[in-house]
Length: 57
Image (cartoon, rainbow, N blue to C red):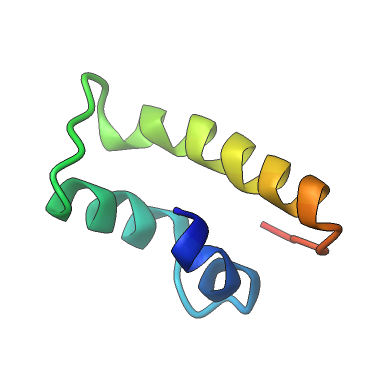
């Protein structure tokens, strides 16, 4: 996810695309994609906070 943070920040990739990419890489989720979206957003916000970057979702 950290590798694609800049693409999300520049709005070149959506949250749904990131979740699909994670699934293609072999990460499995027990919940539906609509529920996975929220922890992914929280993680991206945390990365933005730590790096001092401005992230608008």
